Image 1 (spheres, one colour):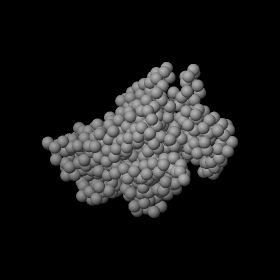
Image 2 (image 1 turned 90 degrees about the vertical axis):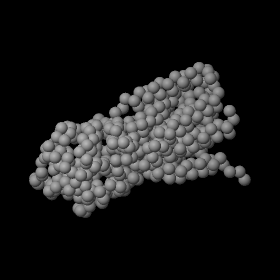
Image 3 (image 1 turned 180 degrees about the vertical axis):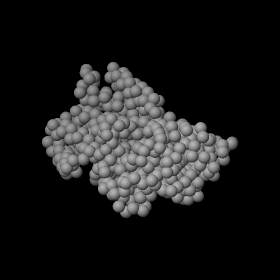
Image 4 (image 1 turned 45 degrees about the vertical axis):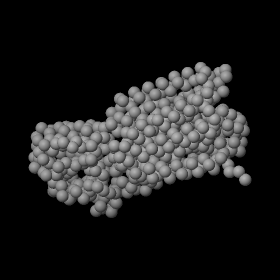
Length: 464
Length: 102
C-alpha cells in the first residue's frame, strides 16, 4: 500500500473518531457514535497490517497478543460494576500512558523502521517529539496509578504534602527539559532512560498532594495528558490518525478539567497544587459545639414525600458507595404511583468523575430526561416540597454563598435549602470531603435521616 | 522554497485541537463518563505504532528488544481498545428515554 493511500486511511479513521465524540451530544446519537469509533479503530489497525505487509511468524504473535489484550479488556468491560467506573477510567489512562512510553522506547531503539534516522543519529525533531511523548506518557502512567489507588481506597484519599514539594516538582520539570536538550545534543541513550525514570517520579509527586474530592479534576487532567502523549508519539510516527486523536483527547480532557474546576469555583492551579480536603480547616473549628438537629426516621420521610406534590432527588458520592441507585429508583416509582412529581438534580462535581451520577442513575433505569444539571433545575428548589439529599453534602452547603470564610465560598451549589423541607440521608454528622460543617443540617426545615443510604431508601419504600 | 512536512502535521494538530474544543463542548454533561471512556479507547490508536514496532525488521529474531516493547504496547493498547469501546457501549445502552405510555 502506498504511503499516500495509507495516510488517507488514517485520515478517515481520524474523522470517524471526531464523529464518535460528536455523537455524544445526545444519548440517541451516542450509540451510533461509538460504532463510528470502533470502525475508525478497525480501519487504522487493518491498514497498518497491510502496510507492514509482513505476514510471517511475527504477525501471528501480533494477533496473539492483540487477542490476549482484547479478551482481557472485554472481560473487564463486562464485569466492572458501574460504581467502579472512576477507577476503571483511571486504570485505562495508565495503560495508554505506558503504551506511549513503550512505543517511544521501541522507536528510540529501532529508528530505521519509522524513518527517523539511525540509532545514535536520530533526527532532532523526532527526538524531541518522542522524548516529550515518552515523558508525558510516563507521567500519565504513574499519575493514573496513584489516582487509581486513591479511588479504589487502597491509598488514603487525603492529600500527602511535604515542605518544598512544589519546588521539587518545578526542579524536576526543569531537569526534564535540560535532559531533553542534552539528549538531542549528544544522542546518548542514558539521557533517554533518565527522562523516563524522572517522569515516572513526577507522575507520582504530581498526584499524591491532591485530595479525594478533587479526583474529578485529576481524572480529567490525566485524560488530557494521555491525549498529549498520544499526539507526541503521533508526530514521531508521522501518523495523522494519532495526531488527530491526541489533539481531540487532549482538548477533551482539558475542557472536562475546566468544567470540574468551575463546578468547585477553584482555579486549575489551586487544584494541582493540592492539599485541599481531608485536613482540618480552621474556619470549621469555631462552630463545632453541638447544635440541635432534627432527627427523623424512614416513616417520617415516607409521610413527607407521599404528601408532597414535587420531590427533587440530589444524589452524591455516598449513593455510589452505598450502591443505593436501584433502591432509589424503586422509591421514586412508588412516589410516582402516588402522583408525586419527581426529578433529579446533579451537581457538576457530584461523585468522583464527570457524569458519574448520570451513569449510575441510567444503570438503575432512570430515564435521562428526568435528570437535570445544576443550571437547569436550581430555580425549581424554591417551589419544590421535598429535597431528598442522598449521599451528597458539600454541593448543598449554603456556606458557599453566605460565608466568605468558608473554603468552598463561591462554589456553585444546589439551592436545596430553598425547598419546603429537606431530607438529608447521611451516616453521621461528620463533615464531607472538604472538611467543613454543613449549616443545612441545623436548619428548621431539615430532617436528618441517619443511616446507610441504601438501607434508609429501602425502609422508606416500605413506608410508602 | 519547500515547506517542511512537520508544518503540515502541526497544522493538522492545531486544527484538531479546535475541532476537539467545539465538539467536546457540545457533549451533554450527562454523557461525560462515556466521553472519558471513549476518548480512552480512541487514544489507544497508538497501537498502530506498536504494531509497526513489533513487526520491525524481524528477519531472524522476532524478540529483539525493540520488538518486545512493541508487543507489550500491543497488549496494553488492546486492553484499552476493547475495554474502552465495550464499556462505553454498555453504558450508552443504559441511557433510556421516559416511556411515553403511563
